[in-house]
Image (cartoon, rainbow, N blue to C red; front, side, top):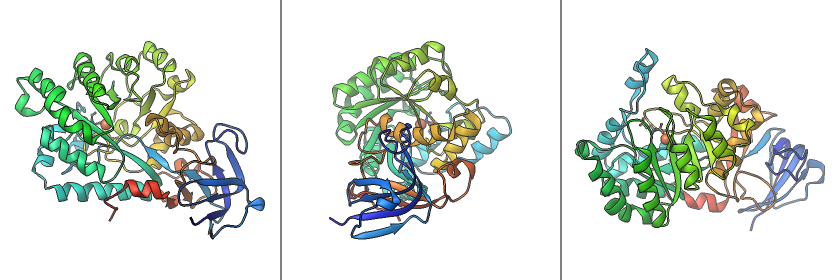
Length: 397
Ligand code: NIG
Ligand code: FE
């Protein structure tokens, strides 16, 4: 296997507290790192770097673990910029536009869906993302959800069945019938294609009882659980996520103190998606209350055509810092290690010895530039291990 030494790293963030300054970020300045095709072999001061088969010069730029985007809806057709414009002039987001994307996605060819997904994957990748979770949820029929999962599997191992996104129009007057379809035929058919099950448990989508039924059935079929919760209103969805030991509960825009207490005593990660609050002009979630209570927080793009057409984790970091009062280091940790924890992955999100060699080299001396230069092009190169590259079968254009 070819070894490669990355020299002249101005600032290396490893997220391994045994390295460097011994903070959670495990940071070293004037560093070097040796990797092979698969994993990190050595990390240390630049002056001590051993030789390797190849050399990559970081030119005093910072190096970070590849971003983990643990929440996306990349498989869709069409766009909803008109809704964004309407919201910016005062219209309130209630998730209603989801059905427009369902109609557009149902009408699209598989090639069209694959091409759109590929384009968005390429944008994420160029911005330093190395692991991406991708949900279905824009067809809401057994065949359509299978098709979206199959397309998602061409781009990632982290694939989520979101048949329970909203009730589709043909079940408008028969939501029990749709929940029954979700729990039987659709789940049986989709479970073999997915790793995760998710439910949009919120006002206008599914109730806590409906979500419990779908998620318990999905778990019995071998799927691990995550949940969209409290984006639009307070509900018992966070408690449900904790009760079911979901890996992650996502959005958390509306939180009671009791939700925070439950999360802080659990292994469930709170995934915040500030691109959604930005794009819907809503109040941001209270990241500080979560962090100060010791809850593990992740940040992700929520890339979708309605509430957050965002493909830049650096921009998400900027929002987290500027609007949610996270420190730059908290935002970086949440975008890397936090995302890995939200996917219950120990092999990514850090650059300790043995971690997957998934990292980004920045055209900036410090990782802080990711948040400090919103809209800038700070990521110079995204490097992926061979396993991570293999997970992307349909290579980006
Ligand atoms: O995570 N909240 C539900 N689903 C998406 C929005 C989907 C849409 O508006 O198309 C979200 O924000
Ligand atoms: Fe979402």
